[in-house]
Image (tube, rainbow over all chains, first blue to last red; front, side, top):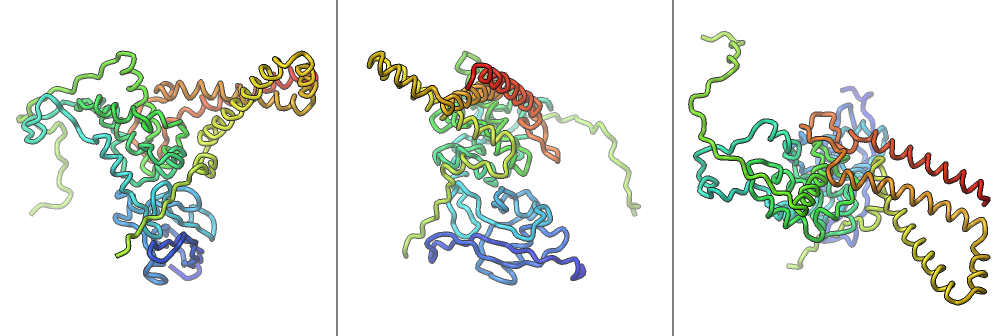
Length: 275
Length: 147
């Protein structure tokens, strides 16, 4: 890359060290940017070349792990998934995700998110055969169309962007939040699951699903297209259905693991000559 | 060793009162809350005027009505009607969608992602057009009645 195609970008990064700062402040850094460079690349440049004390989370650098969610120019993004050029400006402001405490600089405390996630029992619950849950010998039946009814909601990477975008999470810290509620629906909608009543008891309480007022900002900001707002509304429908006497479908039956299956499609020929 | 406390970072009331770079539905949420608060304020004022002042006799009631018969209160009444129309129709949309209607079905997230509420945006736009039409009708009615 030639020097001509480089552009200087000013990063205003929010800094806060609990050991020495009374309150957060913005610090200015100048970063040489080139075509294709992400916000995360810019932060890594600052850490490696200007100020090694800058703290932020990062891991996969490919929008899978959800570590690097932060507020970039007043909107939540994954830093690794967002290119500097997208903003069409020379000045960027980077802050930690709101609605969760700051540990240091751009590092939010995700513990409340994980606690709420755990509270909705995000796993398959079966009552018919507990041994089968621990030592599986058979399969739980599920048709492709049954999988499609919740597949979208399984893509959550727990980055916390939906909570940062949610206006209810902003003003009510006890609110379960879009992440946990969407995951509650994801398991309630899974035909293999039999724990719907347990989850509805959790999300139907105060600060549960009825605290969502459908601003849909969570779905708009979600970097993985999970659509938590839709999952939450479908969860409300399940709650209403239960109140008016609707009953949950029984969990899908156990079926023996097929032993004599044959591939329906012939394996492709080798593209490299075999010796 | 001194305990290190994490810094609170909740947006608080600005989190719902400032829609910033979010799109249409986030602004509708804000407007729904504001119109709701406005209608509640109007209801309280209205109840006060028609109970407290009324039971104090004809003279006070007439004086109150004379005070209220001016352009500013007429404009206020028009805003109340506008807020009512918006709150009622947007509320109807919210009731329908919060019960899982007019949302479509979950689909695998294939980039570029489009969530349910944005797929159903034509419904929202139709609702906004209806609100605007009704507000124009009421504006005409106010004009005919005289400000």
